[in-house]
Amino acid sequence: MKKLIMKVNKKGKSQKLWQTAKRMIPGGSQLLSKRAEMFLPDGWPAYYKKAKGIEITDLDGRKYLDFSLMGVGACVLGYADPDVNRAVRKAVDDGSMSTLNCSEEVELAHEMLKLNPWAGGVRYGRTGGEGVAIAVRIARAYSGKDKVAFCGYHGWHDWYLSSNLSSDKNLDGHLIKGLEPSGVPRSLRDTAFPFRYNHFEELESILEKHDIGVIVMEPIRHQEPMNGFLNKVREITDRKKIVLIFDEVSAGFRLRLGGSHELFKVEPDIAVYAKALGNGYPIAAIVGRKEVMEAAQKSFISSTYWTEKIGPTAALAVIKKMKAKKVPQHLERIGAMIGKGWKELAAKHGIALKIEGPNCLITLSFDDKNANELKTLFIQEMLDRGFLATTSVYVSYAHTEMHVKKYLSAVDEVFTVIKKALNENNVVKYLRGPVAHTGFNRLT
Image (cartoon, rainbow, N blue to C red; front, top):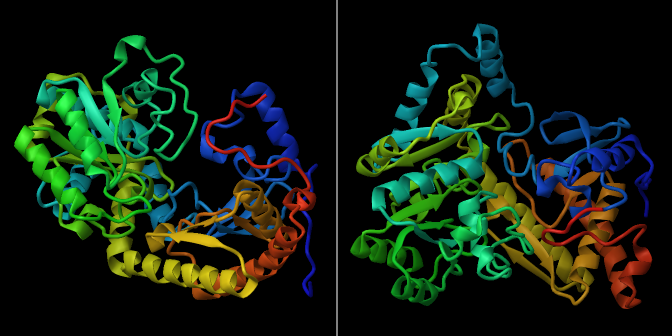
């Protein structure tokens, strides 16, 4: 290698603090997707002291370019966006909480309904998981039925994890394997039923066997709808008077400002937005048809911190900038560059890759029996070269073409190492620590 490579220090401040955290905080972190073991168990710099644009500085002062999750999908404009921060600072100075309501939540409701002209009502939360839980509560109240069919990943709440009371593998096809329903009341058994994306026959089978009142699904993750899949779901929910919820927590504001469902011209009864809506500040919006959303009045759905000022203020600034800068188009272009680069470098080095879209959430996987070992090696070697990188890139507005060129240059070097490991049939030999965890693993 021509460039100086700085090998990850297993005993850096960030790595040491992670070991300390695991002794006091069950699981080490509040979020499964931020556990060091999900990336590089002994080497991942679990903590930061500064994040700006796509650059993150760890506790040892080492700087990395983030070509991984960008705040687990939250910071679609980039870290510490100046326009969003400016609006938030004013909200803080004016007082972020009061006995009275903030007017920004009304202004944001107007914006959300303009982006979703099919809808007539808006409620708020502060996180994606609780946003979907709110939507499910409203939908159950409207339909008068308990049972839910779902497709995809939708958070940690009881309604979702109860699916694994029937089979501990029910959720395995829905992004995270091994999610345990420990602590979920067994009385919720057989209230939530999974079906796979683009497998309409599985949904039909569920509807034949159970009196379903609600369907929850992501309009897109890494597959596009085939054979009119979303249209068929919409048609059957209309016919059977089932409430259709689209979870736009991950995809929302990336493909289209009005949600990814706008791309496919299929309207839900409720759409849930979070993550990118606040660019790192907590906000979730539950947007739905007027008559459906009115059912919220029949249930108790209420929280003090759903009324603070920072979330709606940030969301308004985010929407304004996304419109002005045409952010979805930028994400598409940069993601396409990354995917094209992966494909070309894989061909150059003779490495079998599977690349999936959409481009704004571009993802690769190693088509090899040692896929997880290769993923771990990729993370390790990219970290040595100053990149936070895993097998997915959540593209942000702060990613530039110059950043992508630097990133792909590093990938070129790392693929050389990976090809050597494959030729020797000994990937583990090149790892300086344990293999990354997959799915939900208990930490000890």
